[in-house]
Length: 311
Image 1 (cartoon, one colour):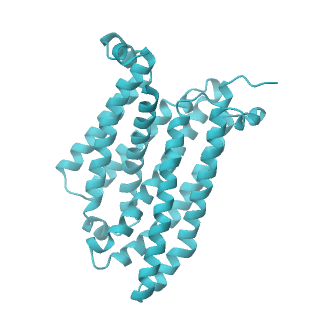
Image 2 (tube, rainbow, N blue to C red):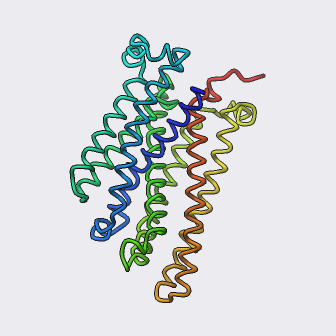
Image 3 (cartoon, helix red, strand yellow):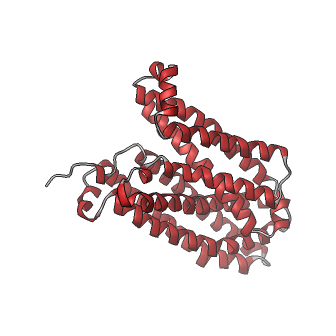
């Protein structure tokens, strides 16, 4: 039960971190500032994401301590909590993550939306996202490979957040467009175009950093572990999901977005174009959530490189 709780809390933190970094960045580069500030939902979304990260990080600190101590009763003892905080790298990371998210929450609650505020929240999101690499498999490599692996893991986390945070914003734009402004269809079209170049760059970074991480987590001499270990099998599932997301993103960019542009002046075609785009974005988001769930489970497993392989 505790292990499932840890995975669920990890998933919630991942999702919140993706939004805290990727969504405010998208509001900066993907939309004209006037359009972005006219929207009411970004502030509410970021407030929710900050609160989720702050609360789940604090609860995860207690849950992970309980897992290491063997039970909730033992995990809540002062000695166990003190060891988690002073004797491991996980404890300080949980605390720092909670404090950063809480700080972002205070900023969002006390200040009006603006470009500087979005920058501050994106910086907080970048720190939260990077913290998963600092305490995960990316920080476990010793020797000369330590910093290349850690750097690759951080870049992988940032690129994923840029993509998935923007995907969240695009999904909300598509479903709430008529509630925000009469020109929302044009805003959505501009947003899709604004994300196209950044999205391509994010995918490139994901691919390159993923190769670096795979070199350390699996290695060329342990490829059989992809099909014989729990971590390897989940990695295969993750790659399949990533491929599906790439296919959906390509359809959005090269087919559905041009269709929307051509339909902006035709109400009948516009309704159909928006409908197709909504379905595609919703499907891509569902796959992204499932992919993050797989990553959350992988974070609790030993990588292939750490396991003894049969000769």
